[in-house]
Amino acid sequence: MSKAAPDNPDTERIRALLNKHGVGQRQHAKVIAEIIGLGYVATSQKFTGLRGWSAGQLKLIEQHFSALPASNGVAYTSAAKSSSLTWNAVLNVGDIPQRCAIHPGEVLAHPESEHLVAIDGPDGWTVILGEKVNADQVAHKVTRMEIFPAPRIAALDDNVTIPTSIAGMFAHRGMQVSIFHDRDTMLALLQAQVQPFDGYILDWALGTDKTAEPVIAFIRQTLKSHAPITILTGELRTLGTNGSDIARMAETYEVAVLEKPAMLDMLTGTFYKRLFRPSGQ
Image (cartoon, rainbow, N blue to C red):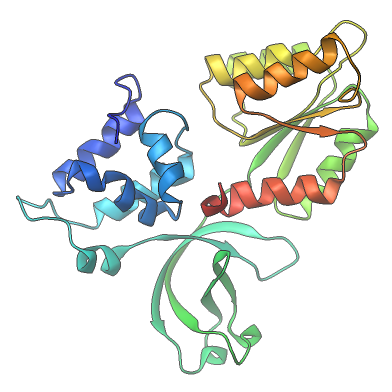
């Protein structure tokens, strides 16, 4: 595995923690992938600088290693890991899901006697009410849980109705949307770093002579953010400059492209999977 870029302080700090606890360099990505609940390939890309670290992932790593003593030359073992491991999970006890981190405990013989329990399903850990556990589900005791803030999405479109519809749909899936109708206003906010965002939904054509390209370039080049970006456009099939520019954006800046009218349930589901279920990244 390639060495992390020296100008990435988060990666260097993570490497220092791993070395302190006796984790060999070849095991760095594997160990961190298990701690943050992310796939090995995606985690390796974080170490090489192709992806960034989210605040939630950094917190999970720090929480995990703060519970362990320094190795004093002793190799990192799976027993030590399993005793203090914190897992990404989704709290699903009402109409709106919430991101959280949990310490799952022992398997419960009578989950209905617990207020909250953790279920390890195909999409990852979910925390539900004990009384909602099905007979075929294996429920674990929740020994500790920390709830994270809702992901924040920025939606930019000069059409007033589109971002409003997006905001309503995303709110039902536990994501907050900040609406922008003017590119320069959004850029000014990003430049001031007043408000961090976990994802972006950007209309490509903003009036007759503006596009979302400066916003995308600023997010990727200046902020060094790897947050998901989706471009919405009604000009995907047109020939000429617009189509080639969009293709260039998708290739250069790792953005997704959807043609209007976009299916909001598909758009919402994509962002939910990326932000609530990081193993799907």
